[in-house]
Length: 139
Image (cartoon, rainbow, N blue to C red):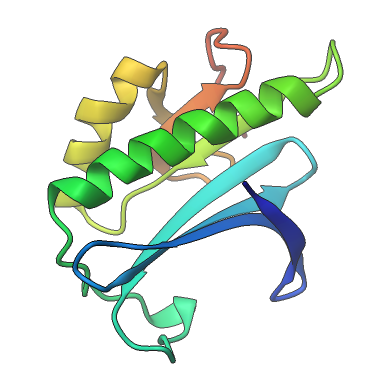
């Protein structure tokens, strides 16, 4: 389900699909420090998408995008659980590009075991240990 490769000189897992409205939805799970994965979701219409450095809200997929995002996230958690050696801790970190998105993420991700905490990069976000244990502050 997930492709593994190098993008922008960093290792990542990716998943891409086409929504009912014709837009492309892409999930990128960036691997940082070998134990922290940062999640990036992009929804775009055109074949040539803008650089990730200049993100803007262009997705108009509504509920379908949220449902797919939850499904893909759950699959990625299961994938990490299956592939992570026993005794190794892996974290998934999700941050919002604005306060509105962060409130939505808090509401839905708490149900998946995520906690609102300070991330490794010194800003607030949602974190989860792959094994579902309590997440320490990830500095």
